[in-house]
Image (cartoon, rainbow, N blue to C red; front, side, top):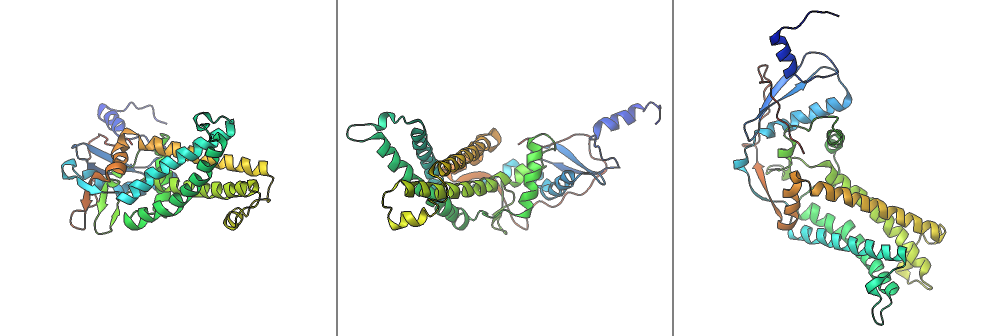
Length: 317
């Protein structure tokens, strides 16, 4: 260990470079965003797996920081069918969760009106609302999402890597991927696909499908248990009736409900973030201000540069 005091120029250089725990000399690259800021990403030999994933994604998305805001245009992201089915799901979830809460508390309030019994009204709203929710969530919305709007339904290995890096970035462990914000708002006309997807979009649907299926199976089982002489389709869909005691099946139903509500809460949280408001708005208008690229206009990879200025430009969402 040396006691030599670094010179002024050396100290300045040390302050400009990111401090990394894996040692080694850096390889630098430079990119300018739409506001003219210049950023540097630094790759070092070795390092952890998350750091390696981060660099791999940075190489893919960094060129998109060069896209200029003035070049954005109005691009259709959602069709009418997706918009209607999405907000129908919101309404149905509110109805089903609300009536389920009434069952749980035993208080039916305004549903006890005239000849209408609050329990009976809640029961019909809950059961048929649940059936409709399952159909829309498992069939209608995915059909419009995939075949009408051309979005992805199946998670890709690339998205799994992005999920790791985005999660660590959200927790403050890694820096946000440079250019990823712009890539999510870039439509590749040759591929007929958006360049970047936030992995939570796909993960949310996997979680929703799993627990909606769990809710449906346990719900039909509970319904069949309550029916004195269930019709054939209820007996068929409620085939799990009798597998477990009624109380245990009800507890599983409640557990799946809490998981769905937690997933929806996370979904809403990301949707209302200031950096994602344009995507939230697109679920009403169907369009978003974005870039449209093809083979001629797609950003080229940024060449490495050893004289990059000591400034950083990162996305913060």
